Image (cartoon, rainbow, N blue to C red; front, side):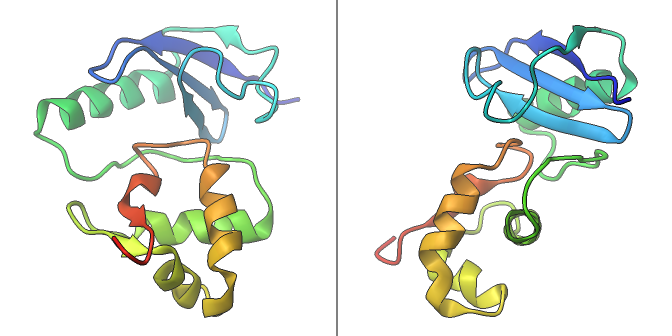
Length: 139
């Protein structure tokens, strides 16, 4: 059985609620956002969970401007297509953006820009898996 842990951390974008299990970071959410949708109910508060401790440290460095990439074990739950879309997000360099169409092209089908947008909207690990680096075709 999976043990799900959680903690809340302050950040410049408001409080963030972090979730992890034995395999890695499952989600970074704002309070009240999507806990049911991401199947995160029943998490036990555990400030000392090693994944959550490291996530807080790396997010603090990111917000302080001293970190541009993350090195965390990630365990988001999603469909095979969502997992593929989120992998492309992880490959977008800090400071760069791409369009939804370009992300779909990188997944092998430039006609799936809307599906890519939907997958990005279900990304449970924003900031760390940078969906904010994907923009519409017009910029």
